[in-house]
Amino acid sequence: MRYHINETSKILDKLNVSSDSSLGYRNKTGFRCGTGFPYKLYNFDTERAFDFVEIPLVVMDMAVIHQVGWNADLFISHVDDFLKKNQGFTQITFNFHNSTFDPILVDAQKLKSYYLDLFG
Image (cartoon, rainbow, N blue to C red):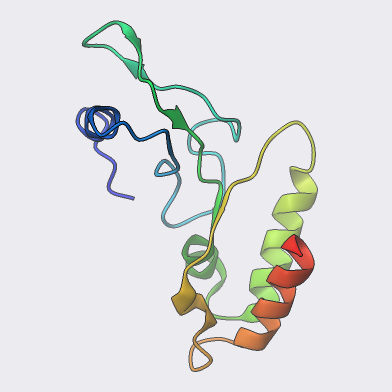
């Protein structure tokens, strides 16, 4: 989430990384790159596309939590609404952290069931 536009792409390319999903919002859900579809970033120094593919990060659990708080019902409602509004003509990439399932912070069982229903 600390993508430096002038450096990170060059480092990823030099390391022969095939794909990256670093470009996304840290505090909200949405299309930071203007799209959910994979694409190649452009290297202005070499006047060519980088070899790796950028797969934009669209939904990150901690961004949703930042928007709605540690409330599992609001979390689920927010993600469902977002997916409903964007159900066609794009790709949605998710990032979930294991700390999201901390039962002290959130109804972890409810989120686990939601994830399993969504992706299972």
